[in-house]
Image 1 (spheres, helix red, strand yellow):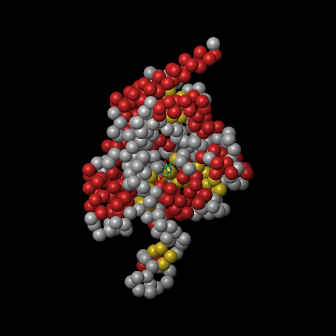
Image 2: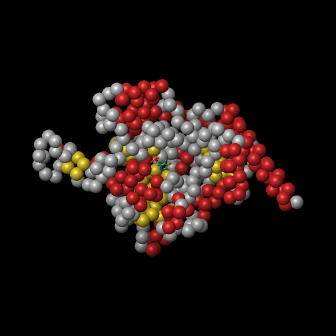
Image 3: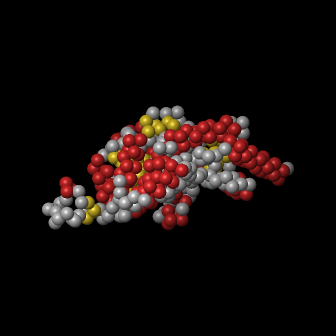
Length: 396
Ligand SMILES: *Cc1c(COP(=O)(O)O)cnc(C)c1O
């Protein structure tokens, strides 16, 4: 079976983790700050806060931006559930902005229209969480312009996009957002096994996130609110969590970071090869790429023309039966039973639903071979032609 994504672990990664195992600290040692410093430098952010997952990072990012039960947070349906759950963890209300079907990303026109309606109704969002789907940056300049106009904060969920660029600068530089979050789950671009990181240019936000990831506790003498009792003294100043990353995970992440540019270059090369193969195939369209960005290509997604639920299900099932582990990203979040209970109804974001019924994620990872790519494309084309034959036969 060819998986849809897979980590790349080299001897240098193994050596880096073993070195930590043989050191004095398995957690809260020197490697987490080294990894944070390296990621901050890589993406030209002044602060980076490592956590045990991107989900944790999204949660404390919301908290740092004062998301509470009185807040309203908007995100897109075309994402992993964590992009919306983080707001619910804070007790906030969540709502969804529709996407552009050709990219899978938040549609700035849909956002502008929804903001106009929301202003008229007197309930504007406090925070908008954008998702750089499949590794391609959203139109951040347009989103930031609306953020200024309607006064909301912006979190970039860049779980798919470390190593990508927007307007010739690295994703994560926060030129157009308050906080940007990365995931290091094994299926993403680089991995720390489990792990995530929040980056920001704002020192106060970084400090709040650092406190919240570790119980809301600090021992920093400059932050204490009363005189220290002695050298053992620390204070809990907020209700935080244990969301810390370990040094073992950070060592793997740091070692992977050194290979990031090569991974992303390879992913782009493989994606271009798929694009060339599909250029000759009618009815199969890769996601469109806007030209002011460089995708990290976490996922390679094609859209099937005139796709119905039945054809979509047939293609993904048969691809898997024939050794190609195709996937679908994503079921619109609000169609999940938990979100249906909150009152969202099918049809709420039509573009996200149309996109969902047409999208197939094909295998893409750095060690994928061109022979495997040819097999993927041939298998999909054969299935499409089988389907068309059967269905035109039925009509006759
Ligand atoms: C993977 C992912 C997450 C969650 O990442 P974890 O590190 O597994 O918590 C959040 N958002 C998006 C868009 C993701 O793809």
